[in-house]
Length: 160
Image (cartoon, rainbow, N blue to C red; front, side, top):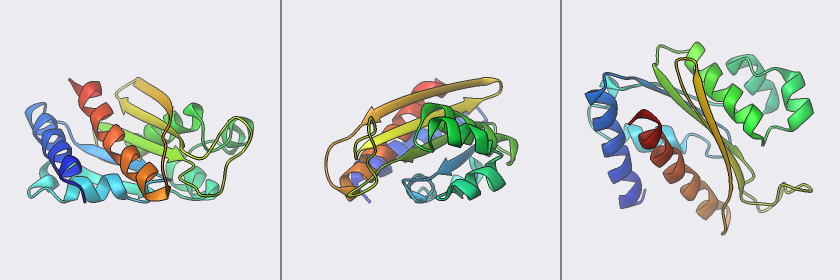
């Protein structure tokens, strides 16, 4: 795990504690990487509730209440699904704020309009959800690492 990830996770923990917020994650393409980063921080039990790794579409529907029709309409790699994942993580946990990642880490999986490296993010707190779509460069590991870093940076911005 990179020093940048550890530093970011430390900042996230401090910000969550300062605001008395607890985090939940919903991850697809990162396979639990965000949860791993935040649980590297000693004392994270005070501000991290749980992480859902919902790799399949069925798990997104069953564990996070993402409507199957939403996945069928927009695809699992979409801002719509990322937002629903973040909202589902919040409603199925004891957290106050959540984040989600869903994307195509590669080397396969690209579809028209969604090249390898396409990642969608969601951040939810209360009734507010923010989503974003980015395209990262590099191999599978590089895409996943950039996704974890961006998810944590985005969370910091979202809760500030």
